[in-house]
Image (tube, rainbow, N blue to C red; front, side):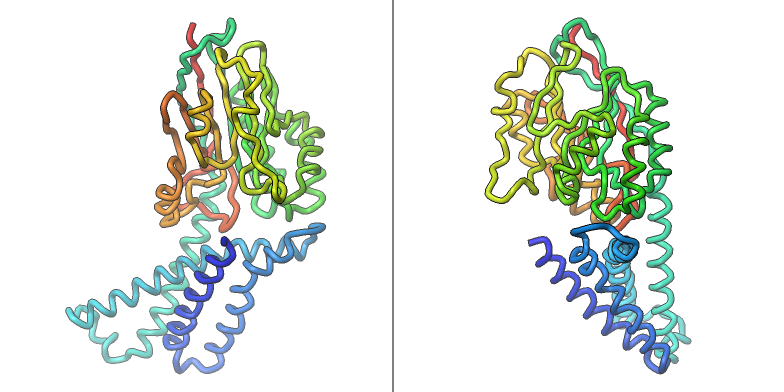
Length: 378
């Protein structure tokens, strides 16, 4: 379904752009042909990337990934800015307001509009790329109305969607690890998508050394995301083991005899014909009188956690929509698409993630590490 929708959007968007661009560049001769010769292979990189993502990574694959991941953002903003130009032309038709030089030389005005649209698109995309590197710490207070043994509070730090790969090198992750450690966490939770499957082998080899530098009183735990499945679940669990991270796959673990951490398998990418393990089955041996914190990569079917008596669910995956106007779609697609929410007695937080995927930009969202100061009933 994803690829069918992608193909329809790809086809309709490109037909519109090619038609408008061809008209706008009328009279430019060889330049017009060159623009289209360059654009057409670029427009295919998104689909080529998904055809090549399986198997061993390579510099060629990573290059295609970089180009292909940029393409949806470029396409979107080219279409939006072109539609804005067409809207202004329509308004001018009924209520003239364009300067005389535009009306007297439509061909020159078309070329000016073409370059303005391209410049605006590149400005927005590259500004979003650089802003995506800014990571904030979002600190908030959470109260769970249960006793946690003798523990009265918990300094919990969690993050999701690191996406080590073309846009998150291990050298950059080092800075994020230092920021995490500066928060002096009791426990650190990583809610899926640590590594992109197209990451180069040297990056994969350096990653465990960096992750082992995360310091937390009760340790570092992780649940699986869709990219852990893309990279191979066995390989992903081995990577966590090398990183001294405890992977929770359909498993509940009692921490410090005070609270439970639970990790569920990722909803969309479990094996063919395999049912996702019901949450109640995972919790069957859990003492529900103690606080229960669930890591579930995708924030879907939130009622399951509420009905099972989970106190706090932490999710990621959505990236908050990453960039406007997709942020508006994200907020309507998910019951809680980003930030804090509540359902019955269960609290939820969906992080926008610390990294980026496709396109690797942020406009209207900010990469985040979430610090939760959890208070238990004393």
